[in-house]
Length: 153
Image (cartoon, rainbow, N blue to C red; front, side, top):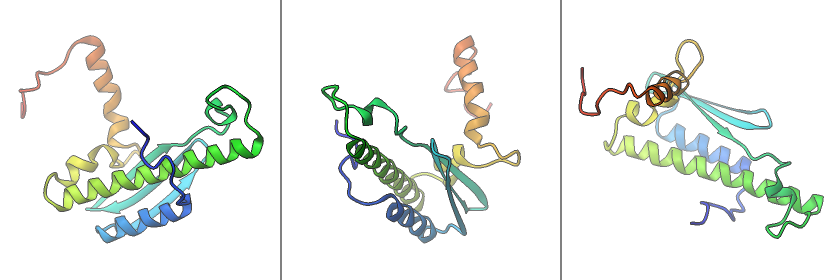
């Protein structure tokens, strides 16, 4: 299966602007964006919750960019183009995810909490996912898992 937006020509900045416009249209009251070289972060405030998505970004030194599929060394310019294409693809994929989540909430298919709960930032500045993922992994590692049908207990 082909990667979504693998050949997009839309630059990353335009996609970030589209993300900001999209979440604003669905009711966000603030928006923030930043990056540190290995990841990009977007955050926004919606439904009385602070939400944060951290997106791993491609590593420009990865062989995916420095070598061709036939294992030839790419020129620096070709490596840069391949890296920038992968970066544009990640931003387009994030926009797609956010649009789908927001529309699912708007359409009543899911609640805001169901769709964005793992990305909500708690008072200690960690997301719900950062709190729960280790516990889930431990439960599976130890085999001590509550039955799926034990809802509400």
